[in-house]
Length: 275
Ligand SMILES: [Zn+2]
Image (cartoon, rainbow, N blue to C red; front, side):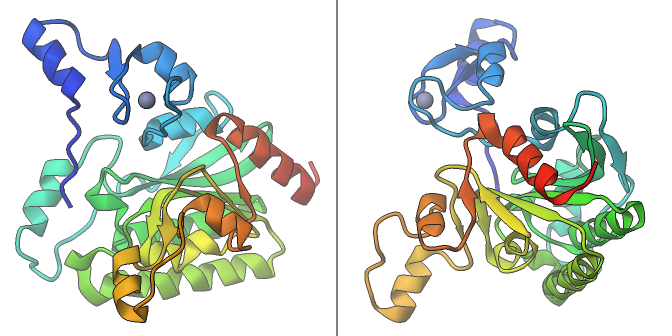
């Protein structure tokens, strides 16, 4: 999946020779904002309320105590073991120093509570779950068991990574088995679902939290609505697969605004963990 990262405003600024990174534009209502003001509003549009997707670096900044994040397993990179056409080149092209695959994991503190946290990035091949994503999650779970601390995974994914075939699907079983072991240890796993969380990730670890919290308006589901409509030959209800609908029907525990997410996580940690 190709993701366009350049917004119209970046084009305008480039053409006018103005510095980038000062202004930003809402992708929904196209209103211009100072980048600083937009980030202070957790990258939610102050005008129309649109939730801009957040990269893992920013998400970590929004979620954990300042300076507490220590990345783990940053050296793991995907391998094109199936010789899938174009995969090796694509990996080379999109790999960034801070993001070598679709998830970042590490140790951190949330309001003083020790946690292991994983944050997915949709801009890296649609946040798809390949071998590296699965391996990093399993290592994160094992570290949390060893340190007897809680686990937070913030998901954003289109599902399995087709370029890794069956080994991508295998990550579902592998991560689920690790989480079952984690649950046997009586530790707390909080899953945060952001837009979009679909496919094998939604059908796996993203829905297995002791508490599952979603951002407002997030698309969460296994198959897309068109595929379901064609399969069951029925019209789907309004808002189907959006987080509010899922909360109403008991599929997730709560819908929490981004600005309140750290407080919500703190409350859950306080409930589960003796400090
Ligand atoms: Zn807007």
